[in-house]
Image 1 (cartoon, rainbow, N blue to C red):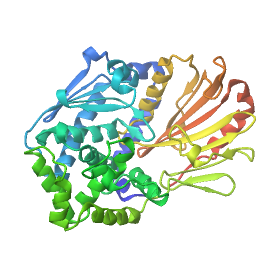
Image 2 (image 1 turned 90 degrees about the vertical axis):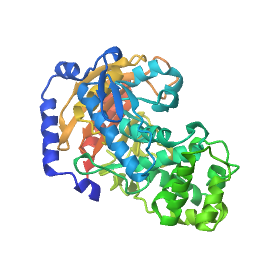
Image 3 (image 1 turned 180 degrees about the horizontal axis):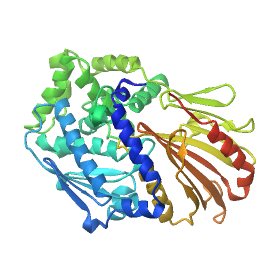
Image 4 (image 1 turned 120 degrees about the horizontal axis):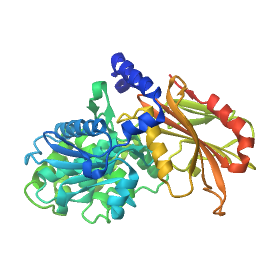
Length: 450
């Protein structure tokens, strides 16, 4: 059990489970009415000291995001003090579904789940889960720092991308502690893993390519490098912190110049970027990260980090290699001949979402799709001692080229205060009878670790 998780009080957990149990007893019709939200034109507008949050999910959800934004700003200000001087007020638009976000912003939503738009001083996103392990929480933490940067930079548009995005990546490491307190104690695990692996495989970028005077055009694979470099400056030694603080102070009064970083490194550290890179690389290599999980004999996958273990339902099921996993799955088994697939995806429950909220989000997304998806069964049982749900549906096959071929899918969700576990059981519709007993057995062999 982590130090952060231990800070959650027994009273808070008791209240959360009591609320979950009450919601589990309500009918789908009652729940849909409670959680359906409102048209965007009637969205809830919640005013706080620094933000105007507009959200057309429920008013409860809107108020939750309003409180989160103020907590985030407090953390930004504590991490980078003496910068927020203009006392700006920002707008945050949070749509109730991805579909509505896509409809409102078709150009941006094709490749992002949210964004900060400097001309409007406004953040746009939607309510829910997305990506491998992301949620509206992580999106707001990332985009919120861009709004914060806009409050003190003389020219947001001329600031280097490595600095803008590096600061944002720093806050991907946020954890939620006692009574919803936000903690920033270590870098993002996933970003560390990326750079450590690339260093080991000798495919890593050089810092000069990301933050140097002649840096390449900023790309997606550079986020991890920029974030870890900014963390290294901000969080390791006072003299390194002086480099970052002076750079940010200068950029509050003038535009960025290409030699700014190199000059400050020489001034405070007595080294150029090439020498600094060697120190930074040694630091990255020393960072310890927990394994996502490991395969053990007998077809068992165990993850202490994510808190679960699962055993294959029989010898004819083969665990997929890590590099072949898709859709953010951390473990997957396949059965040749029947097209059966068993996948496990785990999210950190940062918002947090209740089992009911997640159930309704998934149900709504399935019912809104245009690919002939048909929901066949749905229920909200308690699973492994926690509120959960089970949704069975048919949809266009993901592997077949035949447009008329369908898969049957069963999504099983288990929602704890700390994590969300989604198990996906899938096969061609005509092979369901062959696979179903193994799907049941796999769920029985799925265990949550203490």
